[in-house]
Amino acid sequence: MTKFFPSLRKSLACMVVFALAAFFFAESANAQGIPKPAGENWKPESVAVSALNQQIAAMDQQLLGPPNEPLLYKRKFYGIIVFNLEQGQAVLNAVNNSYLKFVSQGSYGTSASSQVEIPNPLSVAVWQDYHQEVTTLLQND
Image (tube, rainbow, N blue to C red; front, side, top):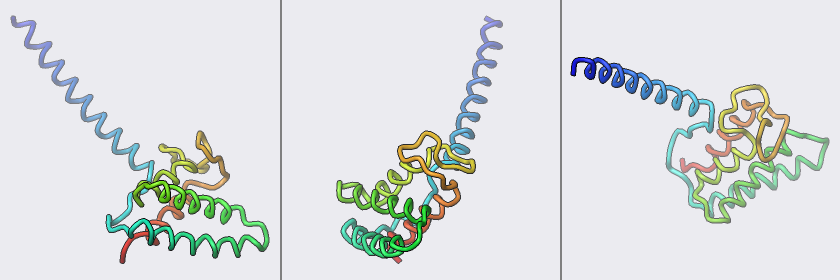
């Protein structure tokens, strides 16, 4: 019986250490994934689509000029958000699902293009800026 308790304590200690490690790993992985918006006060889907379409129209005008690859990807990002909203996704889900087409869930390096649906040369920092811009656009004041 005395052998049982030391192994139980060791097992329990190992489980606690494992649980803490899993928690900290999950937190650090989450910090590398989708940027977290500050608020949860989103515009209604129809208003969000209208606001996005206005931004897309402005980008389309800018794209008539000299080639601008970052703007082209930003326009695609906004277009996919509109598509997601038209498919019935909530605003936050539409934004995040679009973001994940361009940036892998655990991206933290200089390029966002590893193992994504839409490979691109833009850095994760640029995509985080785009995510923040569209989040600001789609949240109520």
